[in-house]
Picture 1 (cartoon, rainbow, N blue to C red):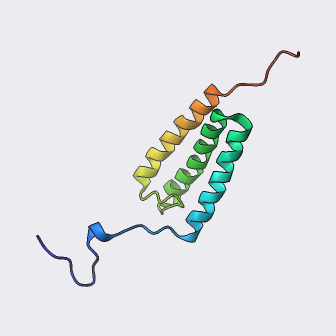
Picture 2 (picture 1 turned 135 degrees about the vertical axis):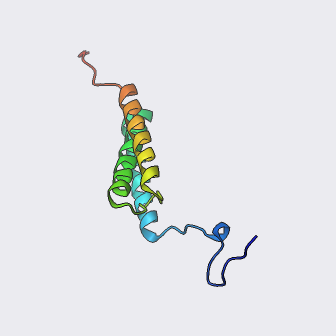
Picture 3 (picture 1 turned 120 degrees about the vertical axis):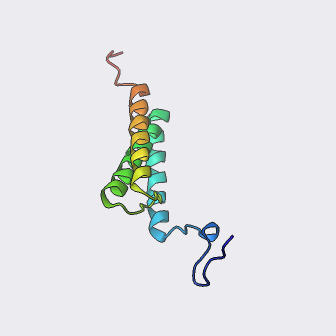
Length: 103
C-alpha cells in the first residue's frame, strides 16, 4: 500500500462540503414540494419533485458541473434526468383531473 504525498488528501478523507447556494436552493425546493403537496397531495409532490430534478439534471448535463444537489458527473445527471421523467409521469398519471360533473 502506498501512502499519499504530503500535499494530497487520501481519497477516503475527501468530503463534499455543501456551499451556501446548496442550502438556499434546497430551501426553495422544500417550499415548492410543500406547496405541491398542499395543493394536489401525493401526486403534486411527485410532480414537483420531478420538475425540480429535471431542472437540476438538465443544468448538470448542459454545464458538466456539480449542481446544488451535488450531482458529480454528466452520466449520473442523465440517470437522474431519466428518473425524474418517470417520477413526473407517475405523478401526472395518478393525479385526479378536473371533475366533469357539475353537482
